[in-house]
Amino acid sequence: MWRHIASNAVTFLVVALFLVGGVILLGQNTYRAEGPLEDAVCLRVQPGSNMSRVSADLEDKGAIANGTLFRLGADYSDKADKLKAGSFLVPEKASMEQIVDIVTRGGASTCGTEVVYRVGVTRKQVQVRELDPATGRFIEVAEFNPAEDETPEAFTKVRDQADTRYRIAVAEGVTSWQVMDALNGIELLSGEIDQPEEGALAPDSYEVRVGDTRESVIARMEDAQAVLLNAAWEARADDVPLNSPEELLILASIIEKETGVPEERRQVASVFANRLDRGMRLQTDPTVIYGITKGVGVLGRGLRQSELRGPTPWNTYVIQGLPPTPIANPGRASLEAAANPDETPYIFFVADGTGGHAFAETLAEHNANVAEWRKIEAERANSDN
Image (cartoon, rainbow, N blue to C red):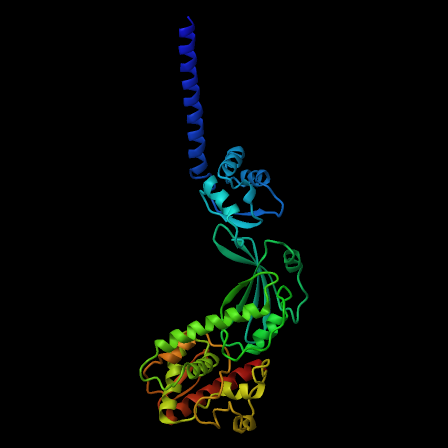
């Protein structure tokens, strides 16, 4: 009888272990399986939060079906105490295992609020925007000019949130003084900077964090521009009339200021290359303007005839060849255009009223284009009165 009882006990234990193993296996499979989330969501984890609060939030959002299993999985993988604060993008159908990894791996927030400090040629702007998880696109919440507008509540509300991300977006064609002035006005940065060399900063978008030094941001911009300049110089055309990367940078800055039409850059570059080849003066207004402003602010008016004739190191109506320094910070496209201009016969261009330019090979053609442009200017002036 005892042998029979012992045999039954062993059988029961085997069945129980089998059932427990099956439950564990089922739990593991469920933990790793696709989740119920139909559309991506943004999960915000507050500082000091825990897996219990996170699992409850995920259940409310429909991202997980079982909060207990989510917490057990986090414990089993030794990640329960590695929860990071921030805003995290949880993709559709994300498994519980994937979500645990997302909220514990660390790094910058992947969704939520972003404040973008835009440094433009004519103005500075601050933009507050939110990522729409469903589309992966940012939606503007507020935008203002810090020099002119009252600071909106949407900005002050998110400024002190730990998971707010910050970005500095520098436009092509801004001067180094403009970048320095903008960085000095961004309170989340620390330290002091001197004005960087003209042309040495790469226009781009740079993510920054509270407490980053202004010097470190400038260093990143300088390093990025050095890489772009070196790549453009190495890939330059054999017959480009430039003797050094520094000359390429100078010409690229002039191209950047002469046109905002991307498809025109190589044509504009061809005009300057043809003029340099023929020993002609470049005769470009942006260099004259730089000789007046030195890149500090915007001239804000038209050039006077006396200024076009006035001798400065940058006045290409007076000097031969390139000016001594860049006149702005050119982007990648202008560097590449300076290194590889189109092959054209053009040596003249003038605005055509569409935002682009009319190009000409002869002075007679150019004078006709100028006359047409003067007519457009007059018509616009009359329509404004």
